[in-house]
Length: 87
Image (cartoon, rainbow, N blue to C red; front, side):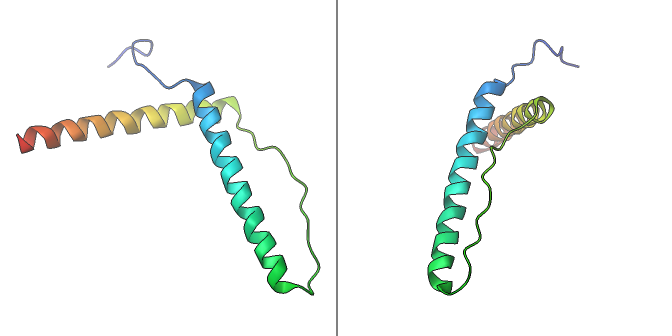
């Protein structure tokens, strides 16, 4: 079994920044859809939601880093097998 310190992992700060980019992008898409829906409904009341900052706790961030590491490791192993099979 591999020593826990010898295994390279992803930096939690980097993963958190990726999460933030995704959260910002999805919130913008939701806002655009709501605006389009409001224009189509015209007479309906406009509902507004309070904007809250999306966060991730340390444990979920650590788990995400580990899952990403496993995913990348598996992808590398599969690519090596395919390359070997193709010659």
